Image 1 (cartoon, rainbow, N blue to C red):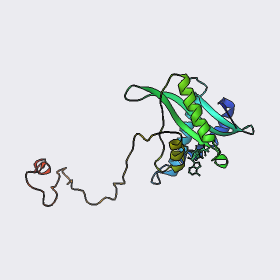
Image 2: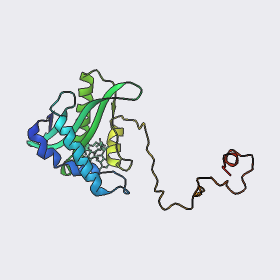
Image 3: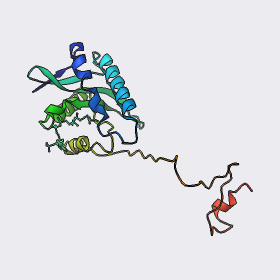
Image 4: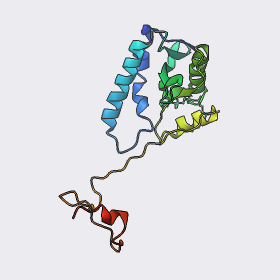
Amino acid sequence: MRVRRYTSADRPACLALAHRLREGVAEWRDPGAVTATARDWLARSLDLATSDLSPAFVAEVDGRVAGVVTVSERRHFTGTAEVHVAELVVDEGLEGRGIGSALVRTAEEWGRTRGLRRLSLETGAANHRARSLYAALGYQEEDVRLSKDIAGAAASPIEADGAVEPRTGEPDGSPLASSRTR
Ligand SMILES: CC(C)(COP(=O)(O)OP(=O)(O)OC[C@H]1O[C@@H](n2cnc3c(N)ncnc32)[C@H](O)[C@@H]1OP(=O)(O)O)[C@@H](O)C(=O)NCCC(=O)NCCS
């Protein structure tokens, strides 16, 4: 296996891996929409990948593309510039051989050559395989996004006019009671 810089000749082989990017996306998300959007994201990253500012790297096994990682520089909200990995994907028939790790290390090396000191990325909470890989490589989990299906929730305390009913037994002097509009 060798890792090298992506060229536009690799585009079809890379896009053929795009469907795997839905791995670990929450079960309540529309799988068709996830697949389509992930493909668009990868296609856009590959469009930009001929630039040194946002390259991609492919892993090649027996002359065939076995995986791809797309990288760029991104500014964290604290102002620090860091490497961002947008997409990482390995052919499912070739998983567990260190290809994913090699691609992540290549992204890290690219960042180091640019003087960047941190790499960040996002992945699905249910993407156990990817999370194991990142943990094994020393990545720490930094942010957590929460979501809940609120469509079928029990009756809300907010009435039609927007007033909030106090909880049963709530004292009159409680902050909730004083925020009532009637
Ligand atoms: C995540 C992914 C890139 C990993 O690629 P890979 O080539 O299999 O990764 P590696 O072979 O380098 O494995 C590295 C680590 O992953 C973990 N791992 C590998 N196989 C695993 C398995 N079957 N179950 C759980 N963890 C596993 C281990 O921590 C492993 O380290 P170890 O083998 O030293 O114990 C690949 O599974 C993939 O493309 N998944 C679909 C797309 C995706 O989820 N991308 C990441 C989104 S950010």
